[in-house]
Structure formats: C-alpha cells, structure tokens
Image 1: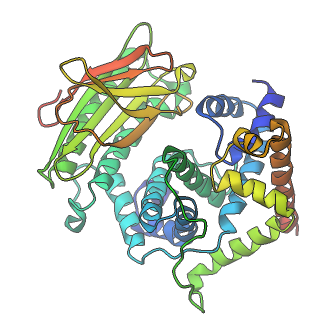
Image 2: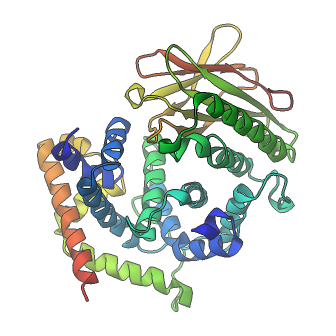
Image 3: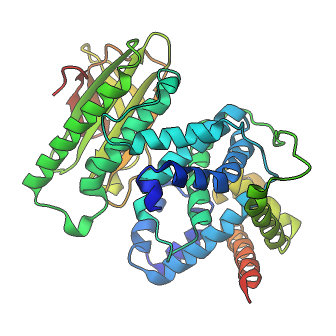
Length: 258
Length: 173
C-alpha cells in the first residue's frame, strides 16, 4: 500500500479495529515511512485520550500485588523461588507466564527483535532448539504445582518451501477448561488468518485457536481456552487462510517430550 | 523500563500504580465485568513486560503505548466474544471523596482528556465511542447507519485530528 492508502486506514488502526491483513500491511509500512509513522503516533495518542476520559473504576486492592507477582514470575530466571500462595490457584496465569518467558527469552528473542542481525539458519535452528528446551523446563516447573494438569508440548515443523517454525503447548485438566498455547515464527502475512487444529488418531480435527495477527517477523503467540477434552489429541496442524498446511507436529507429555 | 524488563518489584509496582486504574477502567468499560477487567489488567502488564524492549520514548508517550496495548487486547477479546451481552453502563465501585495522592496523575490525565474531547461534537463523540468502546469497524458503522464508508472514515479521521490538535494546544507553553 502507498502512503495515501495507509493514511486512509490509520484512524481505524489507531482505534484498534483494522483487520489483521491491513494491520500487518500498515505496520510494515510504518516500519520505514517516517511521515506516516508520525501521523500514526499522533492518531494513536488521540485515540488513547478516550481511555483517560473514562470515569474511573476502582480495582480490588489486591489486584496490584497479583499483577506485580505475575510479572515477577515471568521475568524471574528459571528455577527462582515462586510464591506458593499463588500456586495452582490461577493456572492461566502460570501458563501465560511460562509462555511469555518462552516468547521473550526464547524464540522471540532469537527471531523476533533483531531482523537485521538474524543469525545463519543453522545457528538459528540451534538457538530455537535451546529455546524449546528452556521452555520445556519452564513448563515442567510451572505445572509441577498442580498434578491435575496434563501438559503436552511439541515443536511444529514447516511444510513445503516455507521457513517457518513453531511450538505448541496443551494443558488438559479434569477440573478446569483445557488450554492451548501456540507460537509461530516466520509465517508469511499473506497467509493469515491461520487456523490451528488438534487432531486425534482417527482423522478428526478440532479447530482450537486462530492466528489473526503476525508481528513484523511473521511471529505470533496465541492462547485459548478450549471446550473440547483435548487430552487425547496428539497432533497439531496449522493451516493458512486457503486451507494449506503450513506447520504441523506431534505433541507429547511434557515430562518426556523432546 | 529497564526495571520492568528486569522484573523489579518497585518498577512494576510504580507502573501499576500509575496506569493500573486506567487499564482496569478500560477493561470494565469494554468487557463489562470485574473478572474480565482484572484478567485484562494482568494481561496488559505481562504484555508490557514482554514488549518493553520495543518501547521507544522518542516515538511516543508511555501512557499512549500502554493504553494502546490495553485497548488492543480488550478489543481483540471483545470481538472474539461477539454475542456476549455487555452492560451499557460502567460498573464502578464507590468513588472516594478524597482521592489519594497517587491518583493525582490519573485525575490530571482525565481532566486533560475531557478537555480534549470537548472539542468534538456530540456526533463525533458517539462515532469514536462506537469504534473505541464497542470495537465497531468503519464498515460496520457505515452499514448500520446506511451511509457511505468513505464518509465514516473521513469523520473518524476528522474527529481524531481535532483531539490531536486539542492535545497539542494543551502542551503549548
């Protein structure tokens, strides 16, 4: 898209309602066009004014400590002491914390933030493998507090000529909604939205989450609660908007995966 | 930001004390329940930590950056949960008569925001509110109101530029 086309979309972009395709194109354009980027920042600031104009709602006093604790757990090095008071109480937070650790310290750091200094493919593969190992350790530590949670993890390999990669985590539980977390890297923006399926051994596939937005490097992390019992679903498939399989991989119990 | 990246309690707490309430308020306004607003607040600060390395103060204010994260997460959830009824009014706790000192920033931001929005006509306020708070796209509004899509986009842009100019005037020495 050229500048006039981008600027036509910037108000909706600032207000957060452009579709994934336009958002990707806009972000890409803003990456190199300083004039449009300034316009975008100005409009975003104007849009944020709406948020500050709201009559204030008052959160529970303990929310602040929960937020601080959640960020601390994510930011803390692997194996650091965790606050036992929160263990098992909000598995969603634990999963998200582990997921974000992976995204920020693992593949996200390796691939997502410094495209200009991207390492050679072989080194990149090694770094991804190390990130995956670290992720597995994080997940094992995160879920050890709640034996009712059955985690499965797996790496996703790309199909065809794509150079994409990914990883997946599922958490099955008899007492809570099951959860799915998926990370992808280097997926082409033109293939979005991507649909993520879990399959069983009988050819049945269940759509579990959708990837609508990719970052500048084709990366994304999505998470979702799933109504199905996903404990016995053993394979993940990611399809692009045209239905082509772009990533797939087997899932295995976290304790023995890899 | 370095403190946030390092997971330092003081840095996280300072950020929460400054922005926790507006983020939570947005959650209440867009998602309509205390539980959803609390989840949103937590997700926003976790996302902020994840993206902290990308924040560039040369390109924009911290408040804009954080509230954009909050709004995007809230709208994503809102649009994912279409069909879920939401209250038209914000449910808020009782407002204390004497705000604490650490609320001063929030009150000033609100005062400035209200002044900036005063530059808009009622129609412009309603239009932006439908997009910002209800997650409606320009196309959806055009179809609902039976007016050309281009007209909606032009009005949106015009309204935001008015707010932007009001913000700029406010910042002049």
